[in-house]
Image (cartoon, rainbow, N blue to C red; front, side, top):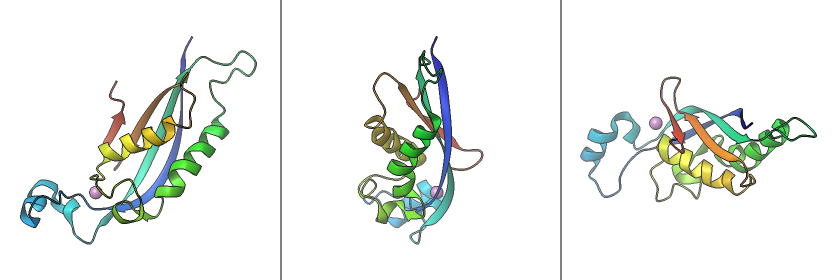
Length: 136
Ligand code: NI
């Protein structure tokens, strides 16, 4: 009787994709415009999904207002209108690809959500490009 419930939130953030061990030329070859040294922005859509049993008393798997508050307090507040490379601790030494951002968000929220719930992160970097973590 498990049900998956999801909450969508949104943040805007800037980033630059590059590998510091490579030349500028090599970075541009691999990451294209995303290696632009002066950064660029995305409007990220973040979907956080929890899977669990509906509570017999409430019928809820999880209070969605509470889930929204947890996401906003722990993720949106840290990432929205920030430069992910420069303004956050998470991407000083980690390339802020959608893949890595999703993994970081999962790790942050995993500490906030009781372990009885399965947690899945879906992150849209554009309308057409999105990643999911864990993968299955
Ligand atoms: Ni980008």
